[in-house]
Length: 101
Image (tube, rainbow, N blue to C red; front, side):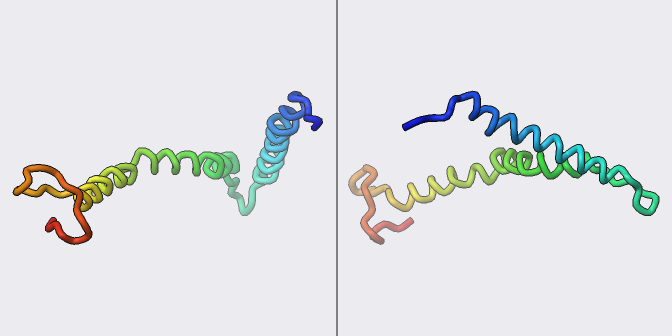
């Protein structure tokens, strides 16, 4: 099975899209550089928000307290599945509803 050389993959998958992004950003900034009603809109700021917004949002979700939720839920599930039987003096596996939490 023939394979594409790595140089063509780098050009087609990395360098090509970067060049297209640069061309589109320059065109967008050129269009937004004209004043509409005496106000020039900040085109580069809008592009930065659209490009970096999802990255910042993902970083916020990873470092937020929402990241601790599985750790808390794991403790609750652990308490529900295992319970202390005083008569035996050890942890035993609970069967359906025979343990009182």
